[in-house]
Length: 253
Image (cartoon, rainbow, N blue to C red; front, side, top):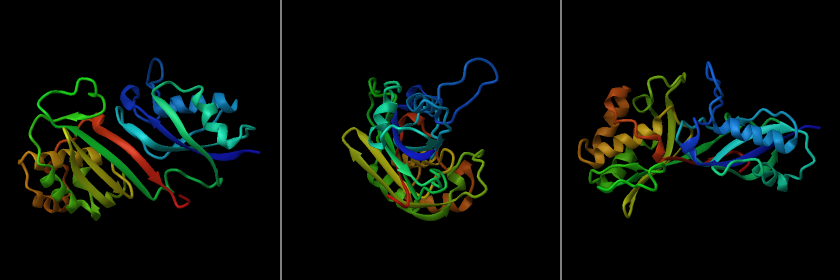
């Protein structure tokens, strides 16, 4: 009998064309996180499977706590399943946990909260060895002003100003539960938790906070940016390299 399994996955997004499987018009399929994981799971359980992921991370975005689910009939004990899958995964991806869940479990619609982290390397010298994992900003940034601005994002708002114009969603209303900015030595880290996020939303928020940090905007301008619901009024979309999907929470967690 088939059972449903939930995986918690981490990956370095540097060499992936995002999460979602993509079939180019010609040539070989693009290397995606979903495609690589789906292939590894199928080899481990020795049958074709369909893998559904909770969050469609973009090319270059990393994940510490992506969630995916699939159905399969296997004799592999659930506490050994992640080891079996990891045997077939490349070095830039790993399953950290597998658990059996109800057949109705949907990693997309049942997610209650998601958390992302955006990391900025804030010095005049580029981060040579960590360039794929941080965004480099040579401007001196005021982390305190950035944190003050971020507090205006907490709550339920229409985040149309902070979404890519091709977001493809029927509603741009989302709830942000927390948004904190702190300096950690040469780095500035933004941590944001919400009910869900629009296309490029976290990267645009980070870009807007950088504008505040370098003095091009004041913290109290954030409510006006939210109110106008126009992408042109927010800051730039920062590079994918600085973004990490940290975790996703569900009712049973």
